[in-house]
Image 1 (cartoon, rainbow, N blue to C red):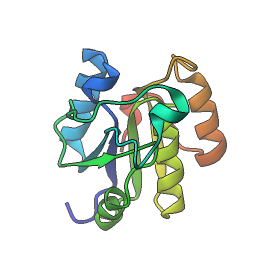
Image 2 (image 1 turned 180 degrees about the horizontal axis):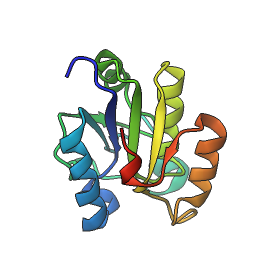
Image 3 (image 1 turned 45 degrees about the horizontal axis):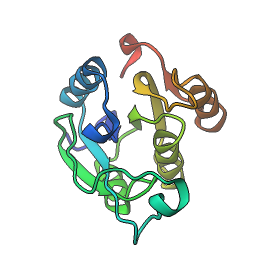
Length: 158
């Protein structure tokens, strides 16, 4: 698809974060429908000092649980430049965002997409929040404030 109406960015749906089977299945169905890119977060203390700063680290190896077109490794909160370049090359009208840690990594992805001139749209039915925002309500509110576009119902997908 050279000019898709939308592309999908799957953020950190990986074993480290133990997503529910229902969430994985929901996002996998979306990945079959759109050009899809995923990030997985791997630990490298020399790049992002998780252990030193928060006393916790993601795994040093992991796998994406959703079959997607491309997987990009990241170290930290932001999607890597290569993932953003890949998404931009697809020329989507919007980038649909799903995944884990709606109030941190998903939100960071939204800012990175926005800064790159892409149009992020949160799929609120396909995200999970952190322990600070388990139902992702705070993340949704922030997303609306910063980016405006949220899809709450799969029936409203492009």
